[in-house]
Structure formats: C-alpha cells, structure tokens
Length: 287
Image (cartoon, rainbow, N blue to C red; front, side):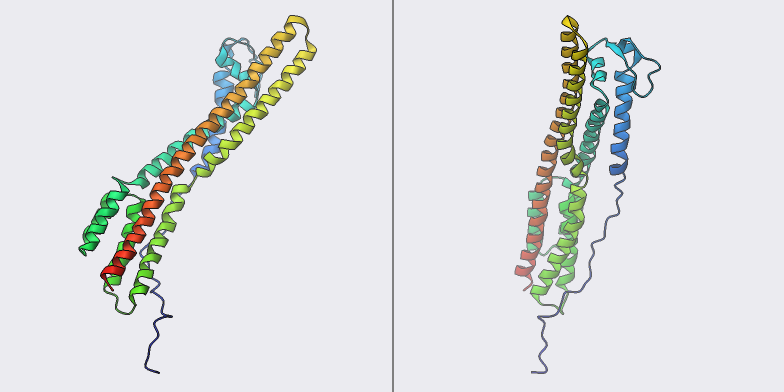
C-alpha cells in the first residue's frame, strides 16, 4: 500500500500563457468633464451668441441675461443653466457610444463566431493543433484570443505525462477561464456611463422643466393681462426644451446600451462554446 501514489490531490501545474492586458481608461475621467465644458461653450457662445438676440447682454459674463431670441434655436438658451449640462450629457453619450462601438467591433473579430468554432472543431478532430491556432490568429477577436490561449494549454497537455486526463482537462478549462476573465471586463468597460445617463438625463431634464415652470409662474404673478399669458407660454416652451434634451439623451443611451449588451452576449456565448469545444475534444481524443 505504501507504493501506491494518489493522484487525486495532485493539482495541475500553476503555469499559464495568459497575460494581463495593459490598457488605459483615461477617457472615462477626461470625457465627462470635457463634454460638460463643451456643452457650456455651445450654450453660452453658440446658442447664446449676441447675434441671436434682439437685446443682448454683452457684459453678462457667465450667464448673461439675453432677451428676445430671434429663433427657436436661440430659445434653448432661455432654458437655463441645466441646458448646458444636458448638452454635455448628450455629448458624453455620443463619446462613449463611439468608444464602445470601436472596441466591441474589434472584439467581434472577423467572420461568424459559429463558423470559426466549427473550423477549430474540425482541426481538433484531425489533431491539427497548429492549424487551429492559425485560425485563431485570423479571427482576431475575443473568441479567437480565448480559444488561442486554450489551444496553447491544450497542446501542452498532450505531451504532459504526470497528470490524469481529468486534471489535464481541468488545466485547459482553467486557462480558458483566465483568458475569459481578461477579455470580458474590456467589453463591459464604460457601459456604466450609458446605463447611468439613461436615467440621470431624464431626471436632469425634469429638473430643468420644473425650474422653468417655477420661473414662468413667478413672472406670471408679476405681470397682468395679455402680457401674463405671453410670459406663461414662453416660460412653458422654454421649460420643455429641458425635457426634450433629457429624453433625447436618455433614449440614445438606452438604445445603444441594449445594442452593445446584445453584441457582448453573443461574444460571451462564443467564448463559452470555445471552452466547451476544447475540453470535450481533449477528453475524447486523449483519454
């Protein structure tokens, strides 16, 4: 009995070919602040330009009291200080939509993930590991990256003699999981801005609307006759610009967030299928 060696407690070698990706996310710090500043510039110096009003206030400073907008575009200025924040929200959404679209498009890789997995399965069935790795290089996406990491461990385990088949399969599975843990955060990064602005933009628009209505009814109490009706209608129109901007920002954020999460779900499914393919292939071919 002393000569028997138990392999049940033997663990796969703690080696991995997966390397942590070094990537900066500085855009998440700079973009929101920069977009709000640009939003203020658009509100103050483009929408609120002196030429857009019949009675401009050249010495108004940060928030001049421009009177008599010459068109609907200039009327947005009278929506108040919430308007530049809402413009900034729209710009933030657009910025991260572009950033996420580029990242997820790159992560999707070339061609269909299902077709890629089928090709790898074909090569594995013929024990052509190098050709399967070459196919991963052609795919150039997250699924290909995870599959390639698993294939490296797969090839290593073929010549491994100290471990059982179950332990080799476990080592391959661990490699796939580690590669997946590096890929998924990259896909989901910065989506929090879209999900947050989907709710916050609506609330900011509502806040601007309420502030506009308060100002409108305050002016109504100070006026009388036909002038009171004009002040009220103008105040309501100005307040609703905040609502329109808030809803526009929220709608864009919700639509794009759902599109991106659907694409990420598809990539995740391809990654899961890749891991299953590797483990099942090894278990059946190298017993």
